[in-house]
Amino acid sequence: MGGPTWLGYIFAAIMLAVAGYCAARLVAARLWRRPTDLDADGAHVVMGVTMAGMLVVGLRFLSAGVWEGVFAVGAVWFGWQAVRVRRTAPLSEWHCPQPVPHLVECGAMLYMFAAIPVLRSASGGSGISGMGAGISATESRFSLLALALALFMFGWAVWVVDRLRVGTTALAVAVPARAGCADGGRPGGYLAPRCAAMCKVAMGVTMGYMLVTML
Image (cartoon, rainbow, N blue to C red):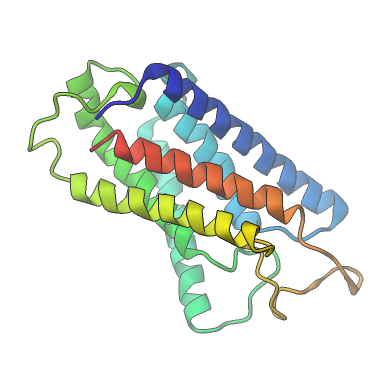
């Protein structure tokens, strides 16, 4: 099914806001020496800009091949981090302690770049918000994968909201390996954990929506 154009513009605006905020986090973390997930924030800067371009044609820049390369590198990075977490390797306070959702995000971006050319040809070249209607069975052969990815992203967003509801610092896990010192041995708190969590919620919901429009 295809989503309304106006909704695509709203989600695109949200993604640009998330990208801008995550970019500001990277700067603030360096200036204030407060720990943040540098890899996750950096990935969300790139994803936010890219997804806005997918949702609204006028916001698109760079070629699909360039973005595919970026997200392939991101998938390798988060995949390696997932292996390290699995092996209980010491975690840096500057790296995301839960890399699997970000690995799935990178995989979802690669999936959408692979599927969008087919969908765009069927929708007359509009943005992703206008896709979905009239797709043949052959063109929809990856629908089950899109559905699985969408369910994961929505589920992740719900999990993050639940962690906030029960009063935890969602995704900024307070374990000894991450309770590092930010400035000369003095304890430094994670930078704006609730705002970071809400960015992850927005990213998960938007990506889930985009995947649903491709079913």
